Amino acid sequence: MGRKRVLIVGGGYAGVSAAALLCCQFEVTLLDPKTFFEPAPMAPHSLVVPASAPATLVDFPAAWHPKQGLLVGLTSNGARGTATLQSGEAREFDYALLATGSSYPGAIKPPVDQLTDRAARLKAVSDVGRQVAAAAAVVVVGGGSVGIEVAAEVAERFPGKKVTLVCSGGLLERMDGRARDFAAAWLLKHGVEVLTGERISDWGGLGDGAPAPATLRTASGREISGDIVFKCVGVRPATALFAGSLSAEQRAPNGSIAVEPTLQVRGWRNVFAAGDCTNTPEEKTAAFAGVAATVAAGNIIVLHAGKELKTYPEGTFGGLLPPMAGGFTLGASAGVLQIGSNVQTGAGPAKAKGVINWLFARIAHGSRFWAWLYGNMRVVMVKSMTREARKAAARKEAAAAHGTAAVGAAAPAAA
Image: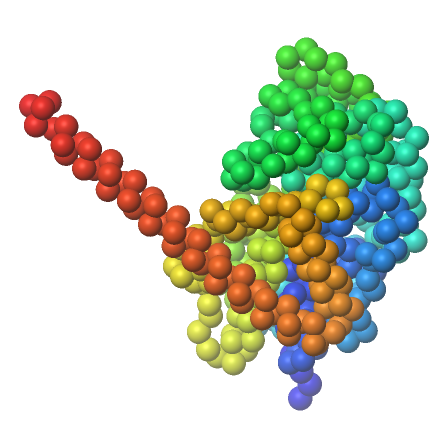
């Protein structure tokens, strides 16, 4: 009897992490619209410096039986299932892992609803790079980590160019104040104009595709023009193509896939999901996508063995929700890394990002050694996240106790 078939849909951080774990025990097929892995955190640099892009694209290894295609339908009876591709081809599986990730405008990621090969992606990146080089004024919309990275890459590469970063709220609102302050100081030093509290009311015809010239208008009446405008807002779960095959209980309100604590898709015993495409409550970052995919892949293994499944995120982080964990770079030699209350700034995070992406590229190329090493690094990271989660829980408990004591102390006076 042959090995059980596992269909992994999506070749990003989650899909690659799962494929590296499962390929030794199962017959894995990796389905993706692309023919390559591309580390999304490297895209801001590639779009500004296109010559760096070819080295970031890694062809999937033959051992994962990569298949270029688009998933448009899925059925399962709990023991076996069938995936339908846009081409009309049907793929049967014993287990499936949906790791389709998210869509992102502005050429940060290739389109999730069309096939893309290496040549097409490099051309798209090169076209954007030429526009950036020729532009006198560059506008970036979005005060999150991606928008800040794009603005920083342009400012560092082209010091004389006018760069404007537009934020509907403030900079990095979900991150620690130290991260925000470091980013704001770096951007100010490098001449980036930061406009906060300016929500775009009219995009001037700019869509979700590649960056393009546009004149924007904000709700306050401000007009902002750019020879090229990057739209770094509007990330969405990449589920639209196959959403019709999901029941109402399997779809969350934002379009993501509703999963059980074991990362099984609701109602489907043998179908799992992990990463940006799910409704799990963690921050949607590459780091968490890899952790979730590791749990999902591990659950496929133990389900096949008839053992108890692990839960995520609580069962992974000591019964607690994970802390904020993320980071970003500011040009080539500065960055921020945050895990809970632990915030690192300066050259260290920038170097760490380069090392981690180099390691992950080796994994995406099929190296078992680097997958093993990165797996051990992930264990250390999860332990660090768990410590931070416990600290946050203790602070919350102490604050609640302080509030209760304060109310109790005030009660007699009120009487």
